[in-house]
Amino acid sequence: MENKRQGQIDWMITLVPLGIVVGLSILFFFLPEQSNVVLSRIRYFFGDTFGTYYLIIGLGIFLFSIYIACSKYGDIVLGAQDEKPKYSFFAWGSMMFTCGLAADILFYSFSEWILYATDPHIAEMGSIQDWASVYPLFHWSFVPWGFYLVLAVAFGFMLHVRRRDRQKYSEACRPILGKHTDGILGRVIDLLAVFALLAGTATTFSLATPLMASVINELFHVELSRTAVTIVILLITCFVYTYALLHGFKGISVLARACIYLFFGLLAYVLLSGGEARYIIETGFSALGRMVQNFVELSTFTDPERTTSFPQNWTIYYWAYWMVWCVAAPFFIGSISRGRTIRQTITGGYVFGVGSTLISFIILGNYSLGQQISGAVDFIARYEQTGDLYEMIISVIRTLPGAPFVLILLLVTMVAFYATSFDSIALTASCYSYRRLGKDENPHKMIQLMWCILLIVLPVALVFAESSMNNLQSVSIVAAFPIGAVIVLIAASFFKDAGEYMQDGARQESQITGEGSSTDAL
Image: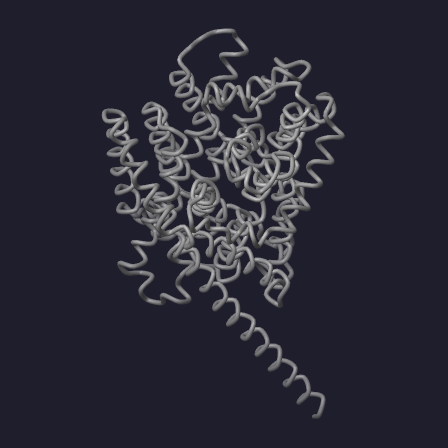
């Protein structure tokens, strides 16, 4: 079996990304300033010129997810018709949520409102109280999970219903591409998918891990280099998720459940002990209503006059970010959703994934916003003075009772989040290294180990180069441009393939009914 699988390894998909990652990492190590300048220019070009492209795909995919969940397609079981789900709702939901967001959710939950509060667009719309807490909910809820869930059911249908043995983006396009799937076009799609996966990983790791370094410095009252500590944390996290991955789905499931308990434990502590419970609940409820009421307007705002460039700086970046994350998370969600209907998968994803995300932003974000509005602490002034978002988050935690305990809980939860997310990513990437891989087959341990290491190299290089947030975001925006078109192609392919599947089922049922009628007549 091992020799057979070795012979199935797709060396082009494995080695080309490896070479590119190594090359980019060398550039970031030795030419950090020049690299950051180039990234900044590329980000401006794509965001400013093609911004509407990202917005159309984001809104379109979300609406498509609602349609297939509410239509006849929602009745399709991802597997055999009488097959039962492999995982309980809690275990399934835990793995789905943790693979989809990583530790970014904690980093941004604490701090994102302040990024909007200091943006002139919020002043144009109204008060900080009314709008600073709305955009975090908008940017992290329905559209992101729309990307995940549409692709998850497409991949789940491909793996569990059609039983195809190529777990790749290109295979999901086969209903439309046909024989071209096995040619140059299919290879290009898979290479784009792997590049996007690496870009999303690099962005995520590079943005949030410095917070973990700041937490360690605060806990131990030391002034170590944030860059050095961040790199050490990245290596430790790499070890944890590698260990979990090599122990298979059982290890991932256990880690996911632990992560969920830690996550909601942190939220409960902040809500109940922070003294802002009433403000948190009321502001969160109002922000949720305002987001739903203005959803279409928020989704289509382009700022054509560039008065603030808010959508270019934020909404477009986020949609691009979710697009590149769509390479790994949906495959994982699709694989663990075997036995569930398409309707259950989509609604469960929105309930568990979006629900947990909204709770995080409402509690953690509105706690510090409440402190700001009441005048207890001026976080905005502090952030404008230092420009250090990580230190601002530490200052928020200092206002909580038992701050050292919260810092430890935050650190452990972030490690668990990262490990849970990236073992699923490494598993997906490992599958790309094979030309064919059956649904019950797993990639070779050495291939999994290689991808575990590879996924950490570029983030380390970006951290070393001390790239700004804007430049880190640029990596995702660039990678998402071609991936957006591929996502649309996958959605269209699924729609075509599922339609044919249902027609075949109806035809077979009609034949059985007809044969039964003939027998009765005799």
